[in-house]
Amino acid sequence: MRVKVAKSANDFKISPKFIIIGIVALFAIIVIANCFSIVQAGHTGVVLTLGKVEKTVLQEGIHFKLPFVQQVVQIDNRIAKLEVNTEAFSKDLQTVTTTLAINYRVDAKKSQSIYKNIGEGYETVLVVPAVNEVLKATTALYTAEESVTNRTLISDGLVNGLNEKLNDIGLYVTDVNIVNYDFSEAYINAIEEKQVAQQKLLKAETEKQTIITNAQAEAEAIKIKAEAEAAANATLSASITKELIEYNEIEKWDGALPQVMGESSPIIDLTDDKTEG
Image 1 (cartoon, one colour):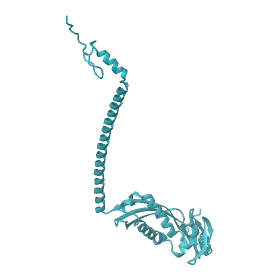
Image 2 (tube, one colour):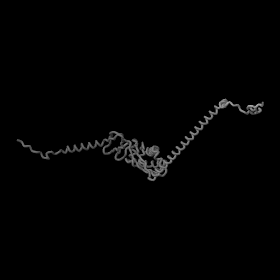
Image 3 (cartoon, helix red, strand yellow):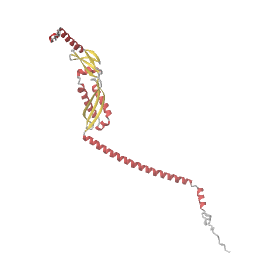
């Protein structure tokens, strides 16, 4: 009968050959992994060789690069959203605090130059200062009240002004929305007082117009009545002819002859003569 004897740890020694093979395999995996770079959809890849920015810009997909020597920095070329709060003075020297929502994108063809000259912080370095500058210049063209009533016009002006400053660099502003306007408390109170005064004036004008309208209607009614009476009188006058007058006189005659008749004829007494005899 044989007795099995447990093997000690020393009996399971790993050969140095296998250790070397494992290290080489791990290194090969790391090297291979570093030979490729994946540029995500909506991005471009800027290639850096030992820190130097290459002119080549990689499009989305898988690309080969020199391991440990080259690095690929991805630049997002999709529409980016930015919100900016800033203060500016209106044409009538009111302080206007404006909240803007800006949509912009990086031109894929300019990704390399933007990264080389500015780096990845182009939004903070370029976009935000440009927004503040253009907004202040645009706000100064309008009074505080006009800023509220001309939002669309001001938004379009901001888009045009920002693109004039940023397009050459490779940044394109697609849309600017004015989220909110805030004014000083004194100005808000003045606006409320003005609105109250305008409402009172409008009410007074309405009442005045009502009185005028009623007076005009009454005058028109009197005029129409007078014209109707005049037309009736004219019709009546036109209907009174010589024959009608004579007819009315005959109708009213009681059959007695006039006692005295004149003009050039001698007066003849038509009463009964009392003859002597």
